[in-house]
Length: 229
Image (cartoon, rainbow, N blue to C red; front, side, top):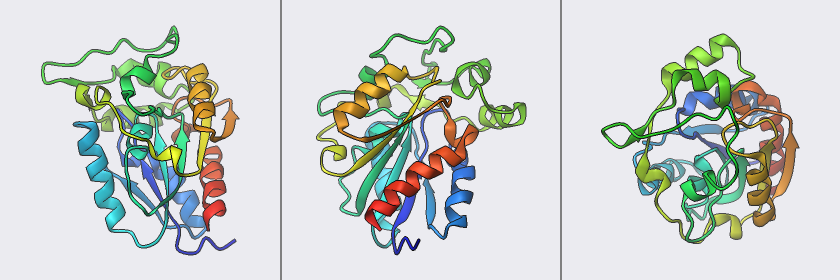
């Protein structure tokens, strides 16, 4: 199928960078889809939305935005007219007036979820052992080593900023629920997806399926692309 001029822009979450999308990028490009990873500074929600908007300005034509985890708050906060559809991958989707932190801590924590606290600079790092225990328990030891080595800390400011009217109220959305997620309660994911009236795709995957189940993630993004192509 031809996807025309529709591009996929992939947005990383906390404790990750654009390389977390590398397997999905390969699969999209194999299908002739222009795929770009948007780098976020993770310094505040406003900073991250501005960074995403700068990437969107460089792309011609309509875009399907995909966000992982924290990045759900970012993709929902852009007002770019280019965005034709949204894809949430085990992602947080605050409603108007809510913060990312409020939806993150909404449900009961998994017993293996890490204890998180900011450092002296106001940034939260993920403990090394948490990558294999909760962030991506299905990843190989090599993948875990890379994830831990490239992690980017997230500022407390990112999760404490209330959002305006989210874009998912005005665009079609898809939600990949990660049923084996140990970071964001799957019950919370279903709650957000239902509230958004998203096309829900539920799979027995961990919190970071873009690394551990890239075919599943690619399939959902391609479905969204087909809907707008």
